[in-house]
Length: 317
Ligand SMILES: [Mn+2]
Image (cartoon, rainbow, N blue to C red; front, side, top):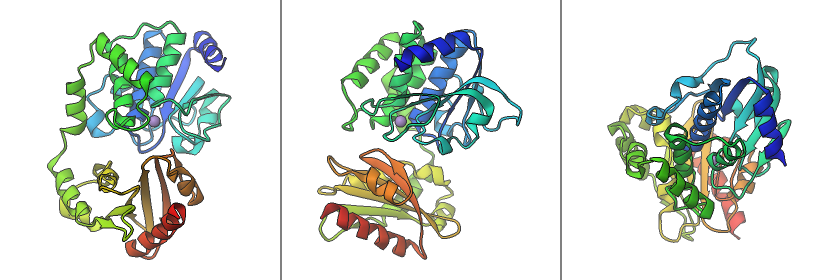
């Protein structure tokens, strides 16, 4: 129902903005580029937007030249898509000001903004929802659109490992391979093309591994000095939380990142039925059942860790 309404708006409109959340991951960029390229091929005027731009490791994707990091104050669009964002605020711009119609496409729970809202929390990635939309538009996928969509699915399913990796994800991946995707090419660009600085940073962060006495939760932490010592940027620590979850017996993993002004960014990962999204929302953040994040204020990284440990103790008991 919603999909066919979105199709009508695509057919009857000309100027499109396609945006996603700040600090974009593979699905944010993949779904943005997939939709932006497809709209362009449909003859539309398209600007893609991401407040933080395209991460360096994803600049090999087609369509990156469509992505802006700022918009003119008076830029106007018939339709604005906000993809994979979870929350309207995460766009980093005032979408409503720039767009006559705002369409939200997402797989995050509690994502309910927009004039039209197409949300399916059972979908592994927003890229899959973009694919459903393009199918509804009778758009014939080519390699330029297939690449970013494949990358979105690959990233959000943890390379088809997470419980979110469902039949639709595998099936669509198969179709995309049929179109010409080379899985090893994309995987090696994503997971085996790291700068040395990231590996040095990983060494420092892994050294902070702390496993609780019960063995059910664990954390890794990063202070600002690590970045200087490794010559790395904060973005290079993406995914480090998964090393804490990879410890046998650990059900909840944390990555605590020190930021300026006594702010600590916490990433949560959990296994199975343990819901870290509720915990993150309780702390003013958000996310998925097994992957979420929040920011807290604390006097030191040790204090931040203890505060979160207390919350996890009550979550587990
Ligand atoms: Mn996603």
